[in-house]
Image (cartoon, rainbow, N blue to C red; front, side):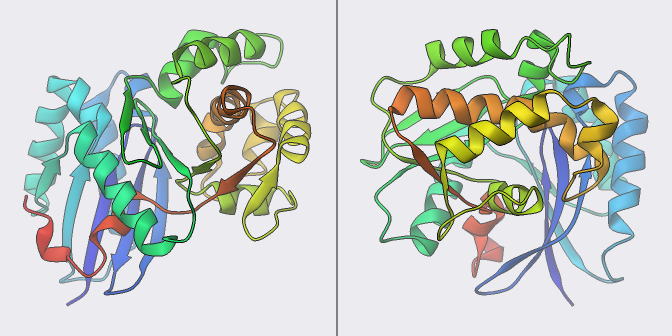
Length: 271
């Protein structure tokens, strides 16, 4: 029997195969659940779709984050649908989410003295290098809606978005790691990195280029399913806001996810 963790985020569903030393991404299904209206159909259809990628008799545990924290109605739907599929679901707090990414980063990069940033569809966790936490109650889906970032290039209010993000970030940011698939994203776009470090100049050049693309153009560049790129403009704005606030000229791109915090401890997921 194989073990899997399904990360039920506000931006996407991510299925990971779990072993003692590695979490392998099996599939990503982007759903932008905070931006959808027919949520029961979306949850049911998306779960059935992603389960097709896992072998029969797999042991699957699901972890829910901001979308399920924020929306009681959606949380109820999710528990009903997951229960009907025999999958236990646990909704974790934002603090627990931050602790998991901190644990994962320390396990993999103990020699890097960085702030660690974990961004989701509806929340952001910043784990400072002295272990303090900054928990922000907005994420990619919120920025998409507020600043029309997944609309036409002419409709996107990117400069306004970056300024707004900067006004909400903590003043004492240092060099940071940006987690959640960022390295795969940069590699897909052929952005040069040095031992996972990305220069500000390279990133800003890429962000400017992507900001001019329509939805179809963005989706053609996706490292996962096409809809995944509908969060790329918002994510780029967050990175630039972080670079501006920290007064740094580079950041560390990481593929770590909260699921990596469970490596070797699958039994810790108490659903």
